[in-house]
Amino acid sequence: MSTLPSRSLKGDLRDLALVAGGAIPGALLRWQLDADVVANMLGCLLLGVVLAQASQRKRLMLWAGIGFCGSLTTFCTWMLDLTRALQAGKTGESALLLLASLAGGVALVALGHTIGMLLSPRLRDTPSR
Image (cartoon, rainbow, N blue to C red; front, side, top):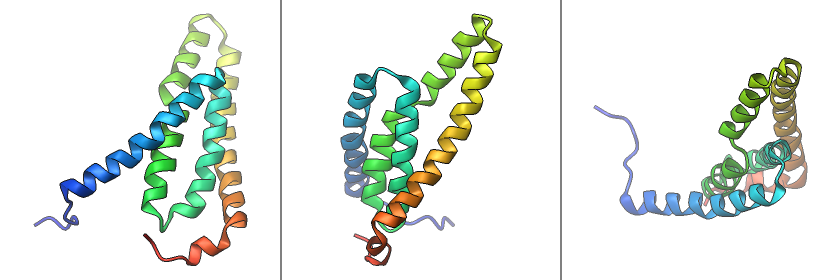
């Protein structure tokens, strides 16, 4: 017997629309930035801010966290950059990109979370919608 909550098609479509609504502007911003590392780091910072507020706000997480930040930051582009650097024999550059992206990404999510908690402490006490 499954213990998963029941889901409705209407609810799933609403959730999908929220993700898509955030993904389009996130992808457009990434395209305009024309710098993959900048886009990834900005997305990590914004994701931290969203995470600080989204624990009780499912719609915010779907739209901003998964949709916007998910399309602003892309794992595949990061891997493509690493692969190209390795194929060009730039082992040191590859290692630096890998370490800087991982450490920088985690640090920026943490910083964004701290900023989000400081900016909106009242949201933690607001009932979910």
